[in-house]
Amino acid sequence: MSGVPDQNIHPVATGLAAKTVEKHQGQQPLVFYAGWFCPFVQRTWITLEEKGIPYQYVEVNPYKKEKHFLEINPKGLVPAIEYKGKALYESLVLSELLEEEFPNHTPNVLPKDPVERAYARIWIDYVAKSILPWNMRLIQAQEADKQKDALDELNKALRTFAEKIKGPYFLGEQFSLVDIAIVPWVVRDYIITENRGFSREGVSPKWKQYADLVEKRDSVLNTQSDKEYYAEIYGRYLRDEAQSELAKAIRAGKPIP
Ligand SMILES: N[C@@H](CCC(=O)N[C@@H](CS)C(=O)NCC(=O)O)C(=O)O
Image (tube, rainbow, N blue to C red; front, top):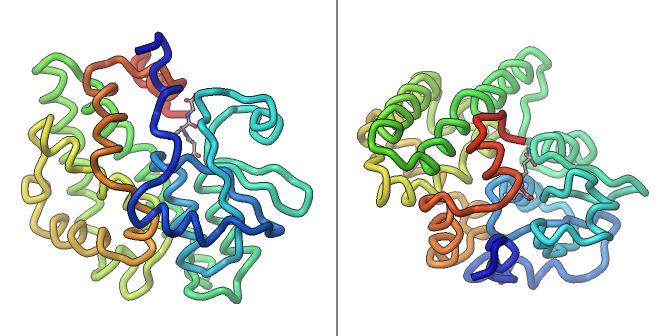
């Protein structure tokens, strides 16, 4: 294995995600630069699929930092989109762009009312700032006491989120960007279940009910690769070997880029 193992990840999507990729090879005004394995990518991908927006899928291994890709996203991260002569990135910015640029492509993933929209954004922000860092710290924690602390904090943060779920989705009947912000980590939670003692029931019955529901949404299933390929990637994080910018930031206790 080379010193930069992230460069050697499986090159393409598999399973249902591979079928979705196949349907989106033709040229389109909107080009979606993606990595099949990436939960941030999956957010934007789910938004594209939910809304039925035409797009061209281009697979990128962001760890290779190829010149063309760095010209599109100087941060070198997937997801990125090229559209109307502009290169854009950041998963949540992209998902909001898709809603605003294609309001007539339904379902709408943000409420129409600005006050309700603001409320949705507060909880999207909560996912990013108060839930995900604990999820990643839990995966990266090597010592038992650090794992326990991270698991306690993650459970607490998920419980707070779960208490606000209107049902069946976070905002009620409408599947929204709040759900999209968190669902890629819901579908990957078997990693922390198998390796770090996490359980959906252990958070709360309400969380379990929600998690069991959102993971079955078509747009979520159709952007998922086969489990065994994720296990390979997360294995590096679990053993503290990953070399990505993201992994380094987590190890250094910095905010997730
Ligand atoms: N905040 C970014 C995070 C994106 C991100 O971290 N992508 C990872 C893959 S999951 C990446 O491209 N990593 C390349 C690297 O760390 O060098 C977003 O929401 O889009």
